[in-house]
Length: 452
Image (cartoon, rainbow, N blue to C red; front, side):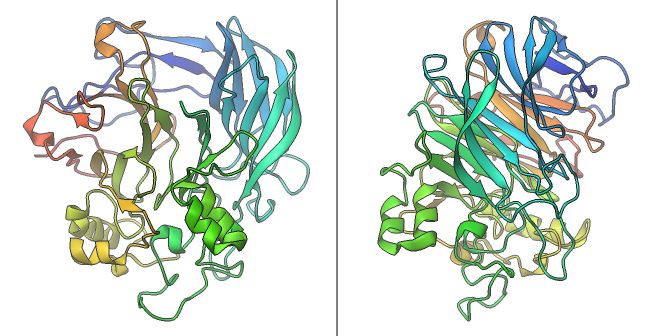
């Protein structure tokens, strides 16, 4: 299995045109950090720096050709980049940037600029100033807000939703990870929001009775803020699908279930498109089929690429990777690292022994369905942003391909993978017999070597 290696320098945004050709050769370079330029495997592609002098850039949106809004995670600033130079700050939010929090996601209205709305996912600071102190955020400090673009600045319009950010359980270390933050509009004109599980142990993490190994049995609350039912503080580990003003579309997969239940929990269910997810930094729609694709980070075992359909239950935390490999999931998580899931909140010794047992434990809402990943790595490789190539700007051989980024352990370099899809656009195409099961059997965490 071949791969591309490259390093992203801090403060520089790169238009990356180097590729990893999945399952096409037996080349297995070692995982290393490069001190100079990215290493390319494709002779016709190159990489160039578009702009420097940015601080922790996380996401971007194009206002027009060579006119870009770039988010800075740790400063809360939205910078406008024109012609390769930072033109100025168009918005400055007071963010909590501890761990994976901060200014994280942006989506322009699909009819932009006729509709001047821009949507941001960010983590609010409780102090009114930027901070990385983990406790300095409201309980529902993750928020998606709509702003209006006036040609030179973003002005606040309304808050669509507030989501759990604070991880301050009794007798647990404070955390700020599994925070999600990816947002995008789908071809249906709806806003899709990925929310990480923020360490929760509730029904949406496939713990129907809460953080207990005995279920069916007494229901146990997740923490001092409630759960395991998906109240406002436990609407986590999900992909949400909202109308542009923040309401739940009536054709969402669990809309009628939530309407019948009523109350805060029912309102949460109405917003859900998929659940049973751990955390993601990448979500994209296939421009050919319109299907939703999502990368998902594992703990130590099983990074995933998922084709997400309405009502999907991704299986976390009962399942990671293909359910038939449940024994490998359990072995890795009980023998490697800190040997704990959901930070220190759930012992991996609770993982099921068989695929049948794992499937029987899932919390299945009416109409929900479980689906194996479209592709997995046995060990976590830290996949990140994803996107499809539209058009033939890179050459017709790349049109419609899926690009997936991944980070190195030091988080100052990484990889860009290229995946081809099958003709029906429902699966990952492979031409290496070792990957017919759509699992890369790498040898260790962050390793890319195919061992079969």
